[in-house]
Every structure is written in C-alpha cells, then in structure tokens.
Image (cartoon, rainbow, N blue to C red):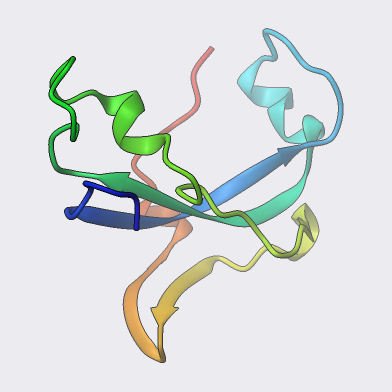
Length: 107
C-alpha cells in the first residue's frame, strides 16, 4: 500500500488494447481498431492526499505505484467472454457482464 494511503478501493474493468493508430474514429468503425482486451484493476485512494498540499485530487488518487495492474494476457477480441469476475484470495469480490457497462461510446 502507498505510504499515507489507507482508504484503497478497486474496480475490475475491461481494458481495450488498440491495434493501430486511430484518431476521431466513428463509433460504427471503432471495433476495427481493437486488437484485443485485457483485465484492468483500477485501484484508487479514496482518502485525502497525504500531504494536504492540494486537497483530494482524482489524478493523485490514481497515480501511485502499482495502482493500475493490467493483464497478464491480451485476448483477441473474438474470444472475449461476456462475463468478468474479480476474486481475491478465492473470494469473489465483483462479477458482471458487458451489458452492465456504464460507459458508452460517442463521437
């Protein structure tokens, strides 16, 4: 755990691995740029910044060493499961499927 950070939270997320350069891609062709997917553990410090210089900051809460582990594998987009599960020490802490995603694409 990062020094001075004791309110650590996590979210299991699907990481998208982009296969080649893209910019201003229309939603209808976006999948053509996806190489595959990987697991992303989005770790956050939900407490205040330890030194109080700038208060609580979203970037500071997410930018500690080891706070965004990825992988360890990239799965080709054709083989991505529709369900995801996050377990720690054998205990399921989060489980869901693609239909529960809270972010949509727009251009």
